Length: 243
Image 1 (cartoon, rainbow, N blue to C red):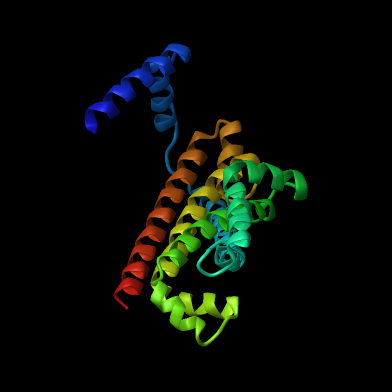
Image 2 (image 1 turned 30 degrees about the vertical axis):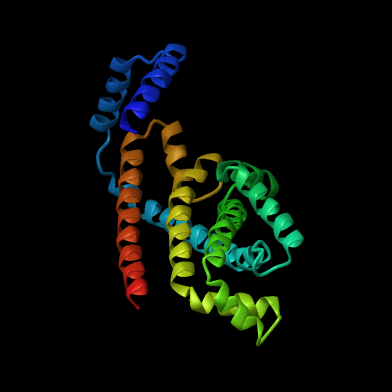
């Protein structure tokens, strides 16, 4: 497996570097300039923390809203729970949502409601819905057929059946939600570059002003913030899986 991957990497690199010449000495010089002219600027820390709070709000809203929408869509996308024709249509619909990158949704959100965190929350909610729907219906498909048959002897209500499956596989659903929250947190920092709020918006503004110290500070705050969230998420997932 390693040899074919290395061969493919060499071939692709040849084409990539052949069409896009990179001045590596200049690239390194730019990096050194950024580091040397950077440094921690305490004047932008408060602004950075406020922007990170915006990023958190965007991520949390998108995760919560996307989960609420994705769960019924996932149930309707599962042939063992919903009628097969409906499941096929819903699966195509959720797949269509996922084909559009979250960054493009952010651009559309900025066009619709203007720059700011609302555009980011809207964009990530749409993408979260499509992505979580896939994770959820894959979880639905993992339930034992015998369990579904037994549950159908008590109810034929699709919402109740989906809820019973959730109770049985709650850990997997929660793990999926935590995963998408971490993804949204990172993505919320990126979509700000197109005006969709969050820390990325402030970083892009300081880049345009060549304020390397401010950029360095905000990037460092972002690394620390995401790192802390990763640790908290890991501990939470570990407790959920054990419980």
